[in-house]
View 1 (cartoon, rainbow, N blue to C red):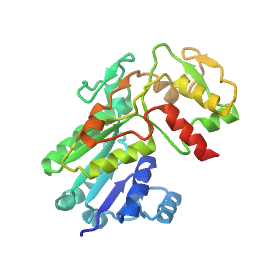
View 2: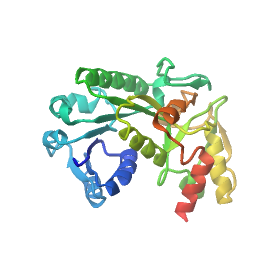
View 3: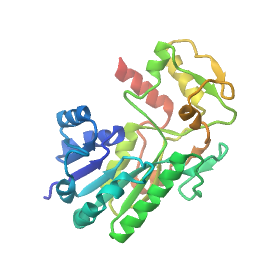
View 4: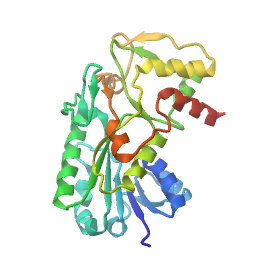
Length: 288
C-alpha cells in the first residue's frame, strides 16, 4: 500500500491537530514554517520540518499525496501559489486531495443573521477581501490542474492553549458588549476531524463551513468561563467606548450566525464539541 503523505503549508494550530490524528495511522507529514524553534517542535512531534526561505520544497511536495494550505494571503496574494505554482503543477499527478483553510470572514457582516455556503460573499475587512481572492485563485488553479479542492471556512478557533481561562484567571478578560453582536466558533479537535473526514472522502470536494451548533455573543463565552472557574464575572464594557486596538475592534465589524449542515451531511460529521459549553468544560478538565 502506498504511504500517504501530507504536505502541510503553514503548519499551524489546526494543521498540527490534524497531524496528531494522522501520524498514528502511519502517515508521513511534512510541515513548513519560517520559525526555527517551531521547526524543532515539528521534528519532536514526528513531523518533517521545512524552513521556508532556507530549504527547497519541490522534491518533498512532488511526493505528496495530500496538500493542506493553512497560510493566509498577504498583500501579494496567496503565498503558496505565488512561490510554488510550478512545483504544484509537477506534483499534481500524485495529489489525491487539496484542502484550503479559509475563514467565515468571507461572508462579511449580516447583522446577526444566518449564512451558509450559498450566501454571497461580501467581506467587510481587508483580511476578508484577501481571503475571497485566495479562494478564487485556488478554485481556478484546481480547475486548471483537474484536481479536487475542498475549502474549509473556519469560524473562531479555540482549544488547548487558546481558551479564555488564562485571561479570566489573571483578570485581563473583557466582556465587550455590542448590540446584536454574535459569533460562531469551533474547537480545534473538530476542525481536525472534519479535515480527516474530507481526506477519506476525496470525491466530496466543495466548500464547507466549519463551526459548532451554537453561535453566541462573545461576552457569554467569557462569562461561562468565569462561572466554571468560580470567579467573578468580568465587568461589561460598551463596545463604543471600550479601549481596543484596531485589530481587536475589526473583529466586531461583522456579526453573523454560520450554518454547518453541509459539513455534517456531506462529511458525516458528529461534532465532538457541539457548543462552547462542552468545549470549555473539556478544556478546563485538561488544564487541571
